[in-house]
Amino acid sequence: MTQSRDIRDVSTHIHRADRHFKVGNALHAAGDEWAVVCYFYSAYHTVKAALLTDPVFSDLSALKSINANLTPDDRLSTRHQGIRGLNSPVLGINEIVALLYPSIAAEYRLLHTASVQVRYKDCLAMTLDDCRDYALLVREAFDTGILVHNRKP
Amino acid sequence: MTEIRDQWSILAESIGQYSADMIGRDHVDALSVVLDSRTQSCTVSVELHKSTREEQLRAMRILLDVEGVFLDEVTMSFDFVEDINNSGPVLESQRQFQAV
Image (cartoon, rainbow over all chains, first blue to last red; front, side, top):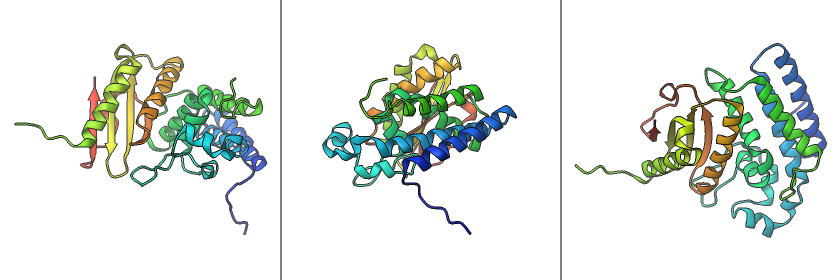
């Protein structure tokens, strides 16, 4: 039996992002709201690839100037939401994206919100087209090299 | 009788008032904050006056700014709802703010 493992390389994250986007498109074509979940996880893996390649994580003083709780290990974070109430708060991917990549942060968070709505709520407050466009925006930002902290679109 | 409020209910109200002010009261039909003191997490639910893509993006950009202000105190998640009165769980450990 094949065993799952954490992804620690860019190409695998991008492969997973492509896979989720493709399945999202198939579900979208069928009018199934679960397309949104696939679109969100496509964006999630794209952002994870960006975190692995962003040189800011090799510069501790730069990280601390962005937020005192950011650490080099945060590039490997797998939690969406952060944790508070600890001596040192732990940031989640949602918060890290907002801190490092403001040009895509609203679209990324809307995708997360839509994914939660589909899985836990009784309706989706966005269109499937919007969610596809948000996932595409995140991917285009990665492909064009914008997902590097402080790099302007 | 004086109402005794703890830090969490004050924080929930601060987040709610600030969010509503920043988005703009004329853009918001209702807004609520549900704060779980055990996990120091909260959900801000927004019933927008116009629930369009442009308005959702605009509101989310503002809410991310609000998140930055309270980043050290709580984790925040957001939701856009059609009817604020039919959204959000209420547990004893949670603190509520609602503005309509």
